[in-house]
Image (cartoon, rainbow, N blue to C red):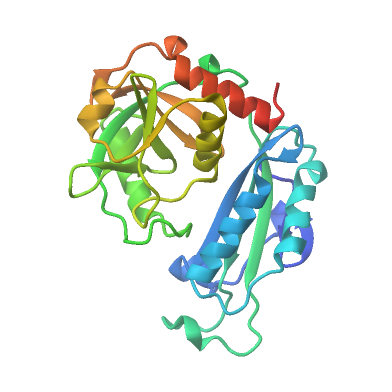
Length: 286
């Protein structure tokens, strides 16, 4: 269930009354950035990392007008409580603003403010890896733009890849670059485990630098789990001992199969289980 009360441009309003102008650039051009933050026990998990990335995305998009991050953080902190949500997510989106349609982002009249919207949604947050539903994954060509490290709302390529996967009877797509290596999932980072070593692609313009990804890497170091930052191919996923994807709301979601090749039962995956348990402890869910 989405918030009954949402935040829009400085005001908390009933969701049914929240609206933006038809010439808002987020609506017309996907000229906007966003974050999704996990909520456990009413607390935003890795909140500061998400807010830093939101600020960095606005920098990369050269937003001339932008919200005060400290003030916006306080707004997000309060949304779960305003809506009686203990476990779930908070979504925040910032657009360049609204003015007469013009492709040039620098054509804004002086003083044009950004549009800021945020809401909370209740979600069931599993406490054990065994409670996660494993995903059937299809590998699909990565046809997105060249700045996937910016978290913008321009997600047509992601949605089309997921639609392709679902049309083929899968749940999700893992995207494959022109060189044959996996970049990431449509809305999550991709991982495999081989001989007790976790592998994930290096950060760069071809993937989003996931906040949950960074947390998992830090937890792996704390647990003494060896890590290799390197690209891998769909065949490597099929042959891996374990495979999973991570995001703020996907947590650590195991794969059931890739391209029809079944994986083993995640209940027997020691590395994924250790990481999931450690992440839940970090999130305050145990």
